[in-house]
Image (cartoon, rainbow, N blue to C red; front, side):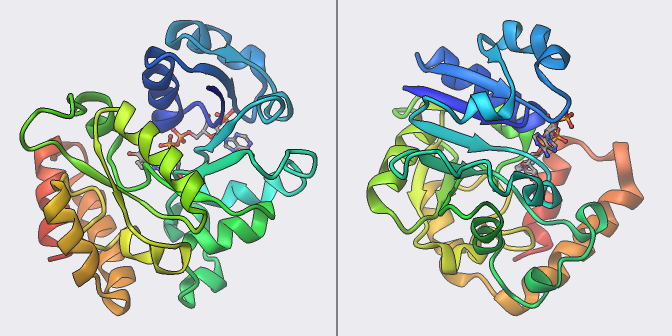
Length: 244
Ligand SMILES: NC(=O)c1ccc[n+]([C@@H]2O[C@H](COP(=O)([O-])OP(=O)(O)OC[C@H]3O[C@@H](n4cnc5c(N)ncnc54)[C@H](OP(=O)(O)O)[C@@H]3O)[C@@H](O)[C@H]2O)c1
């Protein structure tokens, strides 16, 4: 499959490497332009290009950019055929992205993104820490395999994205449509907590929309206070404790 990835940071670069290794042809883009990621692209087995070129002639586009940057992508998909699958890995953090009143008011992040880019998306790989994505993917047969939620309204496109998630080393769990995708946003038990499929299903069912934004802010405070003294396992444990 031909895949364009926009965003060559923590998540975009790992996805480029993993999906390239799984046999897909990867185009990689960022905001600064192809020259700035030429070496990275070569290292992960992708081809660096502009974002306009990265959405042209591909089967799937993966967006992995800061939440506030989606406003810059208005118009990018105007000439992209409807059958191209658009995946989004983003999460909203007000301290980083600036306050967005619609989302603060309860609009699911994925719905807001869809409105900015004027294309329905499939939400995937948003609820996994970069270090988990890089290091904890395993073969399907292995016990205790971590599961990731995948939300979206188009069942055929969601099924295809679930196959891509599996190819990165994780069980893919159908988490429903975009309107209920708040169940996998920051501040919920499904978010970056390294759960197995059964545990994740239960976490999605128990998610509490009212509490999630408060949980998110409390966790940000802890992470800012403790900073680099936290290990990866500490972060996962903190995410679980702060959302249980
Ligand atoms: N890090 C994690 O553990 C993690 C886990 C799950 C989900 N996420 C979410 O996934 C998204 C990406 O996270 P990240 O940690 O990979 O971010 P990151 O390391 O900061 O990388 C962001 C990438 O997006 C590019 N970008 C920014 N604005 C752009 C624009 N207008 N057009 C095209 N490219 C643009 C940047 O390119 P330039 O450098 O050229 O500006 C950079 O390559 C975020 O929404 C984040 O919340 C992150």
